[in-house]
Image (cartoon, helix red, strand yellow):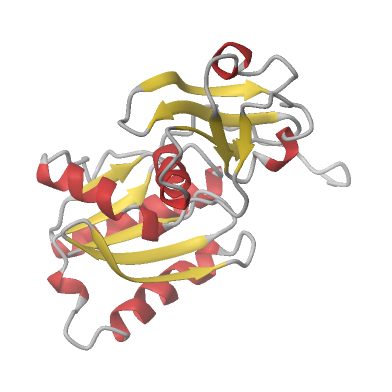
Length: 227
C-alpha cells in the first residue's frame, strides 16, 4: 500500500494504491490552497478505509516537479514528515510522467504524449515521450511558438495535455497535433509509476530530497509594497 500525494498545480490530490492499482482517491479543485487542504485530504482518505490505517502504508510517493514552487514544497514537506514519523521510504514521481500517464490512459491509441505544465505567458514545462517510455524530447522549459515540436510533428501524431496545453492550441496548428482536454496531474495516476519505483527500491533521502523546480525561484515584490 502506497500513499500518493500530488500538489504541483492548482489541484490538490491524494490516493491510496496497492500493487500498482489505485484503490481510493480524493481531489480538491480549489486553486492554490494546498496548505489548508492536503492534510485534511490525507485524513479523509484513511477515514474512508475501514481496514487501512496510515501506519499500514509501505511508502509515500510525491509528485516531484516541475510545477508550482509553493505546491511542490507543500507536497514534499508533508510527504517527508509522514515518512520520517512512520519510518517509511519516500518515492519521487516526476510530474510530467504523471501527466503522460493520464494522457495514455485517456486513449489506448495514443502512442506519443507531450505533457505541458503552465509556466506563465507562453512558457511551459514539457517533454515528449512514447508510451513505452522512450524519451523523444527531454524535460525542458519551452517558450511555445509556431515552430514548437515542428520536427516531431512532421512525422508523428502527438497528444498534448496538461494545464499548459490549452494556451498552445492556437499556436501549434499541425494536423498531427491532438489536444486532450481535462488532463491534469492527479495522485490517482501515480499508482503504476510509484509501484515501479518501489519494486526497484528507488527511494529518496527523506532528509535531503528537494523537488525538481527546473527553473530557479525568483521572488517578486508587489508594485504597491510600501517599505
